[in-house]
Image 1: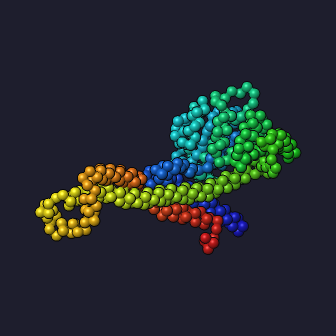
Image 2: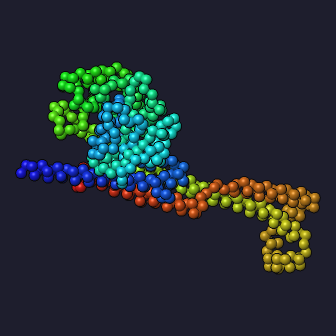
Image 3: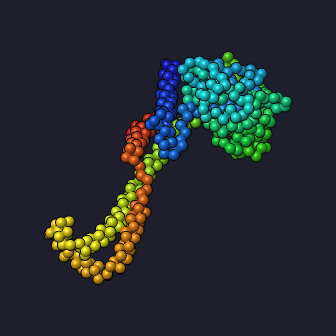
Length: 450
């Protein structure tokens, strides 16, 4: 009866883990698509607004490093439950091997690997590295492998060992981009390889939260006292270095389980899996938060552009009103001068013919004060007055052009596009983000708490 219960519990746990994996995988994939859609993705929208964005990764990256024969390749094979990496005492991994999940079993090399991982393109700048890149694609669905890409690195040794590229620079560069760095210390081999310690120290100073130390092949270290002695030696050597001297130093003992071998050593290899799982959860949360942050940044840029356009339109309206006022005044002066000349010198019959009898009489009546002033000036002063009025008129027309200068505004089509982009991000992207976040929380939170 207890056996049936155990099997049922294990089946339930596996189904829950599968559901969680499917949800996380779906969320990361959906977020990536929201960024990379050709015309309506956040990257395209951000680029049009001068906001460069990077797409989130669909998987986390875990780099394994250590001395040769430290068990890095064996750990990858164990984790994905498939033999894709060569293992042995010799230095099997000569370059960098990317192990990822896919639709079918495949091996890629060189440029194909860089094409598959565009964010690792700068590796091309390190001479010799592109020739030593390969990718192993596996169909395994074991553990969290669909959401993980492992990077198996060359075994590190001291002495006269020559690498075909600058291995230190490559490892440091990869360490800056990876989400996790697992450092395996082999108690049988060169656990205190100086090259390993130098690289780990530099990485740990920049990314202490990514580095995790493990004593691998712990089942081959002899008795418990031998393991403790080896661990003390490693810890002492690590603590001698300023970049690695920290409190709470932890180094779990791990080894690849072998049902046919009786081992009394404690195996903490599941802690590696736990670290990977926590990093995936943290990556999902970070991706959702970044999606919201980038979306709000885009909405803010659109709102700012629309506000600037509205302000420019208001300024242009005021400029048009001022320009029209000066233009009317500039045109009115010559017209007034012409009327004064006609009314003061033209015969009455000519005025009646031009304006009509009623209009001519009204003009004579309302403009009699100006006519009296104009006639009183005399012919010589009238010429000067006419010249001054024409000059003032020209000046007013020039001023009207200056005050009527318009600020650039958005065309109706472009403004409509901005409004549509804001609607798309606000109503589609942010709404989808909220639904994905609720779906993510349902894995661990009761529905009534949401």
